[in-house]
Image (cartoon, rainbow, N blue to C red):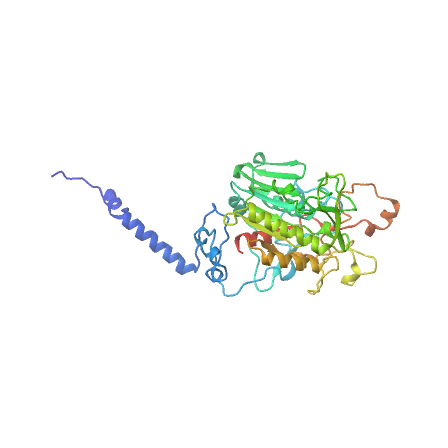
Length: 426
């Protein structure tokens, strides 16, 4: 019989590195970790299906329960849910801003308030604090890794473009300079993270439907018209996206009626009818839901809808002077019940109604109330002016203050923090 000469080291490897020993040791370590920390960790970046706590799984239909094996993360079980959209603004100079204006070359000149002379800086230092819980910190590394090999789109008006720019600013510093680029093709702007084989895109479609305001550069028309049943005019650019964030609101607010084209913009004799704005808006949101149902696999993708972005054009509504607006405002509104007249509650009701009836999962990002408090966060007069200002305007800065768009860094970084939370902690 042949004898084997085993050294003490080889005896150690034979005895302790056997498969049963390794398996038992690994299992014991996992059990120890679970007992010690009380939560489970699962990492699977190949899916974007949201994760739920064990309590959450009892709250969703069987379709969601069947997707448990596709969970991206699991977090500590909780008995109560937190409404992250209800809370207050807390000044936090240590945690805000999340980046500096000069550090992000992707911010458009109409959003660079500091560069255009805004004297106060406090608008950058407010952190949203939900009642009863904390927002998860925005994790740029996690976001980029999740987007690896994927395509994310923000579709809508210029407020969604601001959120797109904010998201790029939150992520770009982790990407090497020679591995990122941004290009614009008419209505489509594409930020590419080559190292991750990922894109973050913005598509200009202020009504989602085809309209006479679809030109990404020249779109300021007073007589706005949308075409019924025309979402595919834009929608074919959205196909193949893994995450889509829709918004549409501002351009609908032209009065109590909206003009709707029943045929084609190419028709010589156009058939145009007037509809109550709420009915026309409902038509567009239903079209969006139908497009999602027909074009996206909701087991592998995520769809979000962002509520209306408020404006602050009537300072009397928050206790200011008659005829004033957001100009010279430097602090948030501290009245938790405040709701400005520029945010149409009837439109919010339409959104709630349509999304509640939707048979496809669309996550609602309800940013309206929390943004309503931020009269201080608009670009106001501190932006690039595309046309020369008259002497009358210069004498009265409030007359040309932009109380619709938001400075960056600023409020819209919080929108993306909420998006991040809903993506990973729904």
